[in-house]
Length: 127
Image (cartoon, rainbow, N blue to C red):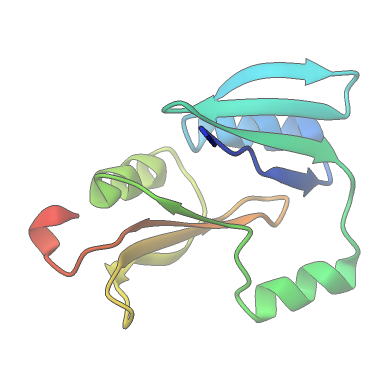
């Protein structure tokens, strides 16, 4: 039985990534290992960060084509959006209903990790 999953994001600057997740996105640092690996968590979910820079071409391609690194289903997407926006997170797509029926907000970290926070419902009272 699966109980959780921890994606591993490759980052150019581990310290900057940890600071961004903590200060802008509200995560807590769980651990760091030898200056190249860390884990952050929020609401019982964790993300692992590894210092392993991406090629500039890969980053440009992912930005231009709006590739996501994670799609996170949340309760209270509007509140989460307002919270991280107030913290200074870089929002690349403001909150809104998408054609596929979910309400999403997309942000991108300074290390080019792109995540969409979503509530999969058509009824706006449930976002």
